[in-house]
Each structure stands twice: as C-alpha cells, then as structure tokens.
Amino acid sequence: MAFFLNRLFKNIGIDLGTANTIVYIYDKGYVVNEPSVIAFKNNSTVFSIGFEAKEMIGKTHRDIRVIRPMADGVIADFTAGEAMLREFIKMAEVPSFMINKIVIGVPTGITSVEKKAVIDSAVMAGARRVHLVSEPMAAAIGVGLNVLDSNANLIIDIGGGTTDIAVINYGGIVLDNTLRIASDEMNEAIVRFVKNRYHLRIGDITAEKIKIEHGIAHESMEEKTFTLKGIDYQTGLPRQLVVSNKMFLEALSGILNAITNAIIATLDQLPPELAGDIIDRGIVLTGGGSLLRGLDVRLREILNVPVSRPGNALLCVAEGTRKILESFDTYEQLLMS
Image 1 (spheres, rainbow, N blue to C red):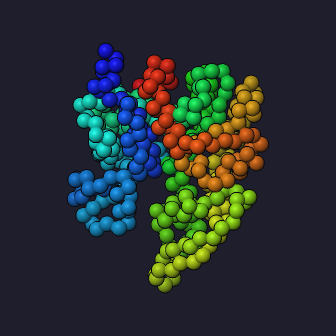
Image 2 (cartoon, rainbow, N blue to C red):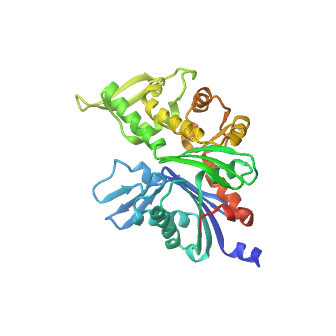
Image 3 (cartoon, rainbow, N blue to C red):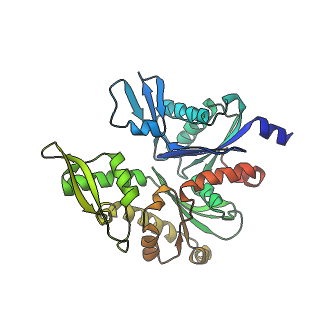
C-alpha cells in the first residue's frame, strides 16, 4: 500500500530560500532550481517566475511588478509567496491534488508567525501534510553526517537571507544562532562600496554577478582584475573601469566579521564535553554564501579548527529533504509539524 501511495501521490522536498528555490520530487529527482522571484502583470496575473522573472528586475514597465517574496529566509509577502510556490510545483508537473506531503527547510530562528506563513503557503499549493525542518539540520543530513549519534557536528549554512549556525547531536540542536545577515547583505555591501569608492552606481544583480565570478574572502587568493560597469554618480553617464578582486576584502569585511563573531559567540556557549568533537570533526560550511572563495581559509585561520565545504554546498538543504523523504520514519522525529 505504501509503495502504491508513493507512486500515486507525490512527496516533495523544498529548499525555499531567499535567493533560490530548489524542489525535489520523490522518484523524479530535482525538478526545479530557480531564483525565488515572481513577476505579476496588472498586479494579479503571474507573468513569469524564476530565472525569467529575475532577468526582469529593474527593467520592467509599470504594469509589471517583480517581487522577491522571501526575506531573511521566510515568506515576507504571503500572496506572492504562495503563488511562487504553486508555480514552482506546477513547473515540476505535479497536479496539486496529487501532492501528499511536503518537507520544507526553514531557518532555525523562524518565529511561529513565519512558520504559519510557510505552512499555509504549502497547504494552499495542495499539500496534505507539511513538515518543516531546520536548514542546518537538513544541510547536515544532506552532507551525509550522522545527526542521530553522540558526536557533535557544527554546521554553518549561509543562504541568501540568513546564516544559520547550529551544533547538532543525538538528533537535536544543542546550540543555534540565526544571523539575518548573509548573501543578500553581501550584495548590498558591494553596492555601497562601489558607490563610495568609485562613485559608480550598480544594482544588486550586478553586485551578485561580480561576487559570484570574482569575489574573494581571504588575501591569499590570487589577485585578478575585472571590468566593472555602471552609472557615474556625477555625470549620470555609463562608465566602466578595471578593478582588482582585492576590493572584496574591504567591501565584505563588515559582513564577514559579523558572521565570524556570531560563530565565536556560539562556540563560546559550547559545553566543554562537546568541544573535543568540534576540534576533531571541524566545521562544515553549506549554502550558496559558503562558495565565496577563501571563506573556508579565513574561518580556519581565525577559529583555529578544521573547516570544510562539500562539493554540493548549494544543494545540501535540498539534499537533506530528499534523504528525509526517502527515510521518513528515521528522520520524522527531527521535523516540526
């Protein structure tokens, strides 16, 4: 019967991120990996979603409204968030009446109101049962760590809107710290730096692009130059200049220091009995923000503990929801209903 129901009704795992949404469907694999952006025409009709909608940011006329429904890892605009979730599921070609349960990764510090918004959106999209799992827990499972044993694991998941820091063992979170500073704030910091240093106006999309292509977090990274394009603040005309990737060390220093200090504050609360596990096993970085070149080197140097980043860092939370769905009885105790 269980086999029959799994074939007929679909179980879905979702990493509902501020920057990107990843959808996994049991027996179909990863079917969606798109930016968490939706565009409406005349305020009601869905015009585009994902990559297409993101390309429209800052380029549309007044009849088209582009929205990022997620903020700080949770749904900030319920109507747009529900529509976006429904459209992503539709992209996966799953009729709403065939959805059984959905497992969604959320920040550790999510409030009860924010939980309700996520759950209601999933129910409106057609889910019969909705389960939430903290993103660092899902990431740890996705990486392949045994979260149910006695050894402590320190996970740092740097997403678009939040940085989740958690110490996990015995199937629970011993310590957690959610910092609402992550990749989006890095983009904003780059925009401010370019404005103040080069008197050049660039948008968040450009800032994100150059961060992904050229960004570094440690001075040991090879110095390279690249072309920066924007609008001159004094003349109002387009201008381009060649800059060094070392600019990111200064532009992102405030954000990286805030994340580092939050990690130190979390470690300071660590029970002495678990300190040995962290020294031996180190820190695991996950999430899109962890892909910043040299970030692992920076943290290793400051914290004096091993720091690793898996090859699937961007997919760890989604991979965790996949494993939870595949071994639901094993991991059900870790979920929020």
